Image (cartoon, rainbow, N blue to C red):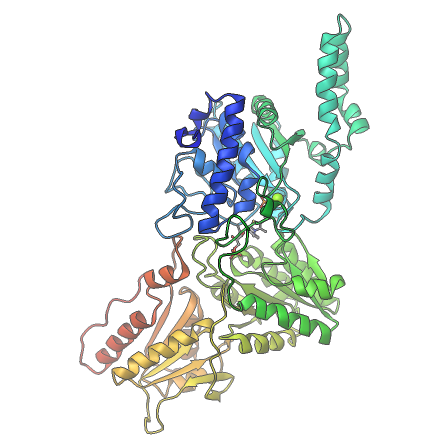
Length: 638
Ligand SMILES: Cc1ncc(C[n+]2csc(CCOP(=O)(O)OP(=O)(O)O)c2C)c(N)n1
Ligand SMILES: CC(=O)[C@@H](O)[C@H](O)COP(=O)(O)O
Ligand SMILES: [Mg+2]
């Protein structure tokens, strides 16, 4: 096995061409075997085996920086930089599914949000320049999907302006995000792809002319000098060159020799250069190659021989949303849907199939998605923008100053809200109920079960003069949690006996944590502590009935699957103060720090967001109020 002999990138240098091809084959079978067991981004990594080998042969990491956009395609990079134990991939204590500085000094970007790599590369190239590190190189890999993100073009604009600042940009063009990459850029890349004759024409022409005595070499130089004209003739003038970026390609992204040749040319170039590589997502694993949906972009554990999932999940929050959207689409012709290159993952495929003229895939362009939604709403449609909670962060200003300032009826449906776990710190949906709190007029719902998701989605699309947000967790939708009463707009999930005049605890349960909150109430009950459990349903604005209800209790407890800072607990606390209700409040949520990757259950336990942990703390609080205890147990610290 060659792979086990690779302890670091320099071990690649002594391999022959045949050995490199053998190594690529070994890596592919390693990836299929390992990721079948753990789940992960199999398709993207199968597509960059040769590219990553070539990068690490041409560049000298970690002195040179090899950067990956989004980072989901860095498994091969990990294998070549001393990390070959994939048994714990994406699990607690195991390898992260993305680059990780804690794992290796070969890793730089940990952020799994797309389209950032060129910004990083621009900065690192500037640092090399300003600190006089001429022999340090930067190579940044960006996918064709990530290239549809606005940040990438902000960076390209700056990079292209610095004609003497070396920087190698590798476009990993596999024609896909999840699905086929959309937009004018994708079409342009396709044009470049279909003119690969230019490079071959040039290479072949050079070979022939250099063999031609006397006139050959000068003629080649003339032709090469006239390259723009020649290229126009042979290949449509690339927009990259129009930007002032040297362009090399398209290159066969699975031919190590061709890749190394192109990367060496790029490395020698004294300014920014784009190496356009054509790759195949899922390459070498038939089930991935033939997966029309997303080429096994991100999979759970599978049977490697069939490619079929080991377990099929019960109904997910996403599937409930998917079905309700189709019903709404039939009832309301003004309802349209928006996705940012994630049609399937956010559950809009059924809607798209049913209403192909009312679905917009904007590419990985959440900011554009939000502002174009403001346009759609102003034009009379009601857009539903389905996006992962953490990715809406990027469109905060658009939600604030385009959608909300103009009182546009846009509904944002946030999937993967709360702790997601295995994708690491930048994927947890722990920010939305904090950052959306500051948006004037915005209304935010957190459904506790499938029935409430359907109901709150319908309530949201009825709002025509403000942004609405409906947010729910990753994975299987929880059990139905019936209401036993209603106070104001809030559902009462549990009420103490009528004989209890002033219950001890008002427990405000947010969204999918309702089952856990009922468990907390049961545990408190065993301590003789009477608890009222309410689900506000719409957590922003705070229900007007909440403060008077709180005033009839001894202590208020809020429990949310969001960061504590600026979350629902903070909003409720402010509402009580504004109402002059001076009842102690304890807010339980996600500590305001970046969370290491682990399963959702492990993360929730680690941060104390469990029924026993919370019940213990509330018991201590009530005991302190009773004077039976002079200090509460230490609360979860951020
Ligand atoms: C801001 C943001 N939006 C959406 C995603 C979800 N996402 C992860 S990878 C991916 C597709 C990336 O396509 P591409 O850059 O072409 O890389 P490939 O998977 O094809 O190698 C998307 C949409 C993300 N990580 N970040
Ligand atoms: C890399 C990326 O952002 C996505 O592929 C993400 O990993 C998908 O997450 P889910 O598996 O929760 O859909
Ligand atoms: Mg791609």
